[in-house]
Length: 500
Image 1 (cartoon, rainbow, N blue to C red):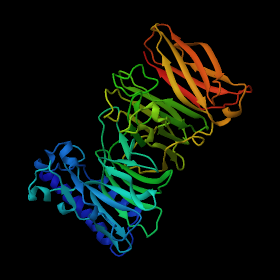
Image 2 (cartoon, one colour):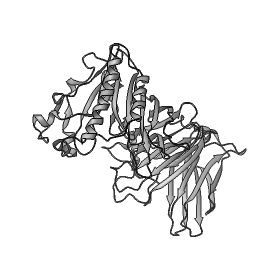
Image 3 (cartoon, rainbow, N blue to C red):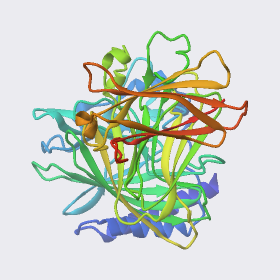
Image 4 (cartoon, rainbow, N blue to C red):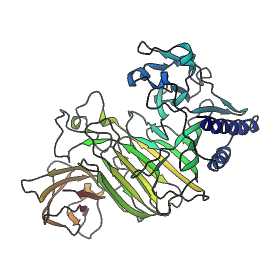
């Protein structure tokens, strides 16, 4: 405990020194980079847990502590971006964060006070116990849906997680600063310090900086929030590895998929589909577009899509039809899609999709990220830049080709056969008349009974085919692209893995 306290005080002292040096002049991203680089040379010590009384609060009790609207940062100035904070309590989301506000006079800490919070009837804490609290994160507000009303725009809370929104959407999948060893002894680096740059009156963009600290890496992040029908967030990061890290996920996205139209059952649930995202979209360095529908299985699935100079990837909620979900509370048809657009050369690596089995909708069991072949090496700074796009209906934009809008699988009575039914629409398919299905499979599978037809009185083209295997337990990769008579691609490439 004493050692942890010493290093905590060293970190605070370093931050205080840097902030003091920048009084009277604007704090910049370079300042945060210097802090991250200095911390990378020190041993890592995890954050101190909250006091026993605060940690003992359960989920409902922690939710019963609410930030007072009248304490909202920048409310009195009437600025277009405003912030409210979370109280660090309970077993989850209890790690403390430090927040500064930055203006032309420099950076000043946003001081925690229990007077900023209302403690509901579920919470029994003494005044001394309340005073031991800290911030655990914050929400930013902006007139996102109406010009006369502040709406939630983004939440930063827990490790390096953040959840952004665009117009007319509800919270769904999360983004992260970084993912470390998701297939092994996973590390969860944390955003420990934030600098919120005070926006000008009437501003349509806001900048914030974040300091990342973890067992294996430190880092500095810059976020430029540009809200709208599509919310754009240009991100820059400078990473400083403490140790060699081979399995690193850059620009990671985390989501939930329980079941959908391609799942063999609904686990006894009354709703037809339950998921925050339904597929992984990739644009490879050669320009090819891939679509991988998310799926449920009894074991972990890891799919690796090798590439060089990727053009983008993201987790999408492509299905926007309420009747496909029938959920008037969760509103899964209003969950965001997120597209990661790299800036500059990301080199060689792979988009990695991790799908864990789940028995309910309460666990984020999906992770997608870019894994560079080079990994992270101590002493070698890694600079990264990309733009995160948050949006709802992506029709006609991503991709510009025809898209697969449903994947259905008939599991048949024969154990080693599957019937696949795919529906495509959009892009050049609208005016197509002679469409051919280009279908491939791995060495363990055989394709047969292929049909391609336009569904009458509909913009949909349907492809059906059967896959069979010679009684093997090997996963079978399958792909399908619709082409014109000259072999030109009319659609993205649908791809899936049949796991027995």
